[in-house]
Length: 235
Image (cartoon, rainbow, N blue to C red; front, side):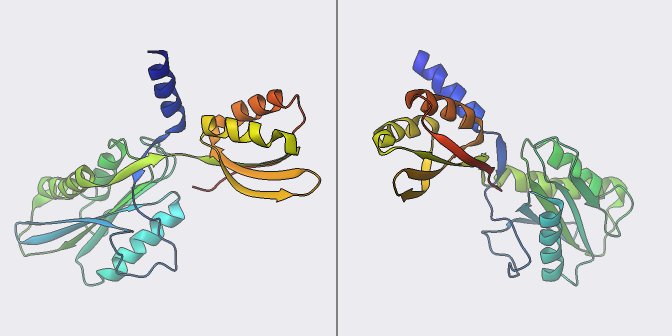
């Protein structure tokens, strides 16, 4: 029972939230986007074609790049409406949305509401519409734009979001075995090692485990390690 709760607690503190299991776009990403960058769902509603594209974005800049790629792919679309929430789930500090010519409040905001209530962070959605000649009305538009996003999110591949930190430190040769003994307890891996009269290690581990690792390893070596720097890695 104790092992179960230890494992559960360890998992909880290292898993921040869920994010799309997709590569984040940059300016060099080619379009049309492959399924490594974009998850897509298509449906026809009253002769209009709706194409929902979901991406992974961890900043407003990467969200805008994704949106631009979709607009480049569908330049003749009647509308390319979008919404993004690029922080943690339900975090409204870094959000954006656009109706892109649809009646005000019928596309971007309804899409954003779905993203914010999805329990998935760092997400951007673009719904491309090719008008089929039948008007949907404001209620119909809201339902159509939300429908595509809801269905896409239900099918979207997701992964756990984990923030990692790199620690660089020195220790003596006599402490090599101790280091290798403790690293698995903190999901730590060696990034680099330099051998001279002492050893300089750079290791990577989940950010919530950093202080516990430093304290444990320092105590085990009687304070003989020297921390040179710690760097939180860009996820």
